[in-house]
Image: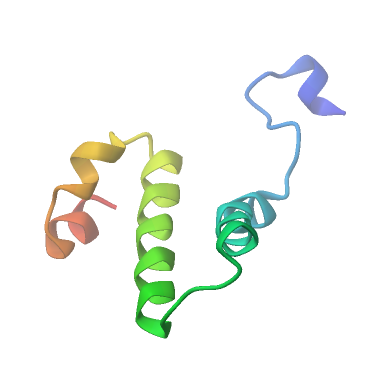
Length: 74
């Protein structure tokens, strides 16, 4: 109940479940991914977006960087 007094504490501590929510939503809408490679690319992009948000980085700017630059920033 600490989140009531300290607004810096998130309401839920289940961040892993929230990170998977978009993947499950995508699967629910389309039924499935067409290829394993497509699923991997989607998971990679969602991972970068989630990590960038947690580090307070600009998501669009982060997605325009090369993989080496992304790794260096995170």
